[in-house]
Every structure is written in structure tokens, then in C-alpha cells.
Length: 189
Picture 1 (cartoon, rainbow, N blue to C red):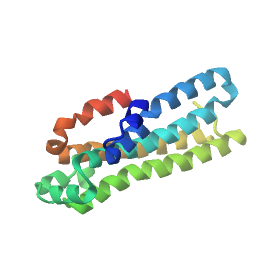
Picture 2: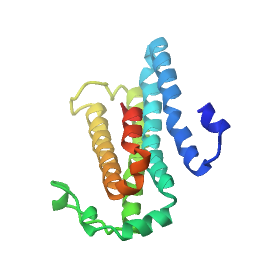
Picture 3: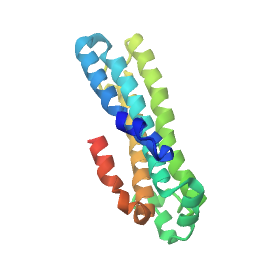
Picture 4: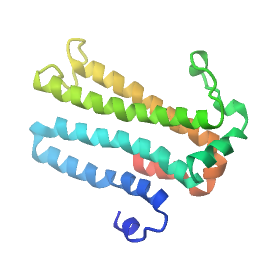
């Protein structure tokens, strides 16, 4: 983080890199505090997971910034084959093909943004349910909130990651020299 901030020569890209890199100290502090204060670990993890959702959104913007900007990306994608906007099984049966260009970029942005919004709502819901002893982490009984929060989180995160992969395949030639798959794997794993 310090190296990027002290060598601020590409701010339109580096601002996203710094936001992504903040995950490391957040994970470290959350882990240490969770071990130290076990009664608050659920709340600490909820904060960390909210930031992780934000980082997925930032990663999409990082990829867009590597190419240039949204307008340039939309023009590049407009000239790509329309098959890149189609969906694989099972999505092709319930989703229309995304038109290449600005609409494709907007679908990708909304696909990652929905995870940020939903994750923050579910974080607040988790805290409320925990305060009322209705969350019961690890209990998949339909009487408690854990089942529903986990299910919604998994669907939302899966959609956000699907959108990122779809975006990468549409812009992989332009992103090839930056090797974003390795960057994402380093951050996510």
C-alpha cells in the first residue's frame, strides 16, 4: 500500500489497487481481534465480508481502469462478436443475451454492485438477528436466519463472480498483458 501511495503515477488505476490491497490488513486485524474477542467475532467477520464485497466491485473497476475508461471499453466491446454477450447453461434459458458495448459494461457493473448492496443489507440483518438470538450461526434450521442469509449471500456472490468472469472473457485480449486472473487468484485465495 505504501509503495503505491508513494509512487502515485497512475492514480486512475492505483486507487483501485490500494482499495484491494487494504484487504490484507483488514483480514489480519479481523483475525486477531476475533481470536482475542471471541464474543464479537461474528460482527468483525461481517464487517470484513462487507469490505470483501466492495473489493470485488473495485476489482471490476480496476480492470476497466487498466483498459482506459468506461467509454473506451464500451467502444471496444461494441466491435466484439455478439456471442460474448450470450450466457452458458443454465443462464441461457432465463437471461437474454447482453448487447455488447455500454449495455454490457452496465450489466457487469450492476452484477458486482448488487453483491455490495446485498452484502451490507445482510450484514445489518445478521447483527439484528444475532441480537435477538435468531441467527444461530451454523444452524441450517428454517427457524433461524443463518440458512437464509447464507443462501442469499452465496447466490449474490456467485452472480458477482460470474459477471467478473464474463467481463474478463469479453475483454481478455485487452487485459492479457496485465494478467488479471493471477492478480484475482492472489487476492481471493
